[in-house]
Image 1 (cartoon, rainbow, N blue to C red):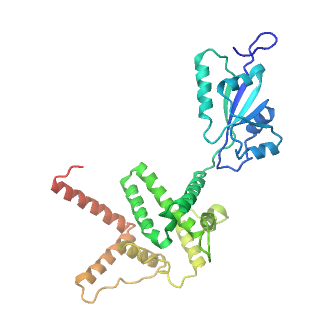
Image 2 (spheres, one colour; image 1 turned 180 degrees about the vertical axis):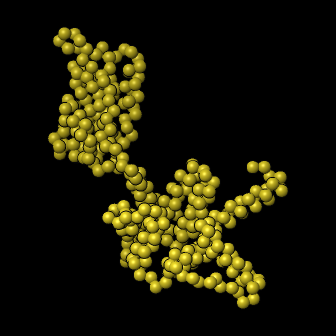
Image 3 (cartoon, rainbow, N blue to C red; image 1 turned 45 degrees about the horizontal axis):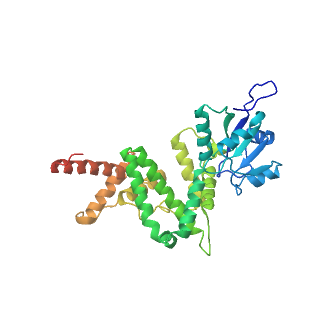
Length: 333
């Protein structure tokens, strides 16, 4: 049976399981966590290398490096004492399972049990895990350790197309997975870039660059500029981008290796946004492959002017054509 006070009344005691996130710097604990640690009769931790221990000891918290059984922990709470267990990364499943068995047996008067998160993951914290995993893969995987920016370029394109397909299919699970695959490409390239002898940069540099760009190009969010419509936001973005890049032509910066319809639509959009009245070129002969190309150019420009993505439109039509082929073949589904 459990302990009793001088009048014979049971004093339950208290077990506090303190959990922390390895994605938050050690020592940055919540105020309730510090209160529990400072008022506890004993503080236990099974992992002598736990990253929190040096900071707890610096704060004057005496931590015992021990791994008690459930029975030993219940006994340690006799006479109303409070014991804080600083959980390891696995969360002490053996200990919690043992406490659950004791509580379920009905033979032991259990102390109060409390799960106290001492630190929480911030949004985006799991990205730290991805960086760590990528770092290890780059160092230890025979294939990944030999990859270059040039060798990986094709995968960036493939993953982007698969992401677009997931979006158009409306498959949420597939969308989440494909976003992860695209994110992997970014982290992989950034990890490779760290090894460049002349101009290395890291994933933090990549993130810092885009953060600075976003803040600079959103003065209506982070500054005192005022815009009221999406069209005004876009115009402001393009103006600021033109000043930053100092381009000679509105066509500068348009990647020529993108799919043809997308390229044609992008060029048409740049000309229209700049207020340039540029007649579409026509082939001299008007027939053959060249003639078809100019016809496609005209269709892409028309689609862009009407607010239609020609690539998406053609993919939708191609899907319908694929379905018609399968129906003719008698393929179901």
